[in-house]
Length: 401
Length: 155
Image (cartoon, rainbow over all chains, first blue to last red; front, side):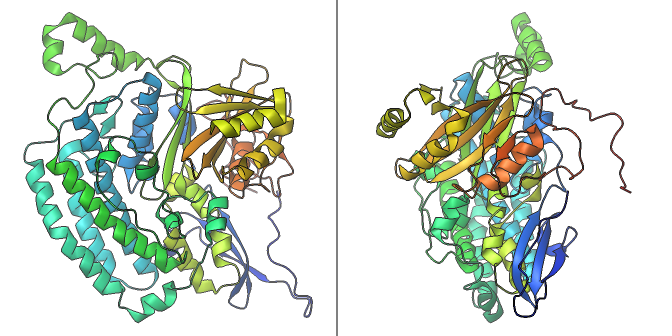
């Protein structure tokens, strides 16, 4: 298949723009992304993102796994915030099952979703500052992210791919002394947000390169299906946590920051302020954490505990059935979405009544947000492409799935 | 939303069929009408195309469901459109000129299911290599890959 023609021939000189590749192996593309650029000097006359280098067939593989096994694959899409992927997926399956998890479970889910939102924003901040040539913020950000990963590890046992949310509940309840450790992190972190801001927001190079770069209007952003902080930087407060609350988000008090400019700097401020809002939510979830069960009391959905298996024949049978055949999910189709750090991450799941999903479609925010890259960089300088890619906050694992 | 759906039914008659799923409203649309239905819904405030994908029901004729998920900004609701297509070379009119977000989504749908979108500006594979044979998300495509595997280095 021929590659698409990029850029127009200059009518005066008859010269064609030069086409170069940015990536697929380039430090600023945050993964394996190739961008074809048509250049006139240093100005961009055409841009085409080429994706698929990280395609691993996650949607296909989900069809061969039971509903609970497929959670492990959702971890590996947006690997900077695996917990929000788990979240969307389990909500969709619970929709099909028609169950609602207990309040304690909902609060713990909110708590971890917000923790991983901060972790994801920290990686975004560190890497996009590094793209601009600022080396030290990366270390400052990753150091705090480590603390969040430690918290996730204490609850789920793993740092990067926790699969902490399960259909109908969680892997575990919160470990003992979790709240104290979380408090320690919450007390320390606000000072760090100020530190990040001090490192960057008064840096003239940072401001010069970000302000007015990569502008997208609200109209264009909606047309391209933009969601998340990137869309909110263009002047609309669409946040699923407020607009279509799930998992008791309506019980939390927080603001949704918006900006009007729609440039790279606006998207930067959005995410910085979102981290502060996430802290508020985590504090509320921690202080008001309800007592009670942290999974549904239904052996057909959530496995019985070890002690029951030893005593109760019925429990043993359910346990065996659950792990050999999977949860029997009634036939039907559903779409459930959550507000991830990058935007709306949605799952369209079709079940045929067996233990495995018939079809899992993942609506990845990075996939749709990346599509508008040509709009951001048209007729700008080559160096702005790097700023624009960073500001969309893509994860190629989710773009290519 | 109900008002919009009533209007939709008035305009398109029996070419659309509104039903209620467990979570959202679902509208079945005839393939030939999809562009005008989507344009109409966009003018009624469903300003975002959130997702476009397909499902392969191998045993059924027509074989595929193309799924469109739209979002209403004022009423803050999703709406799902389903278009059934089948035949040897399944075809649906493209909506890439109505919603820019449909461009890549339709390419992915073509790549994964082999559904052609008529009128798409640049319909080519997006995730798989350009010279790939077959469409991986079809139910008759083997999970373990094709035999023999495509060469790692091309001539």
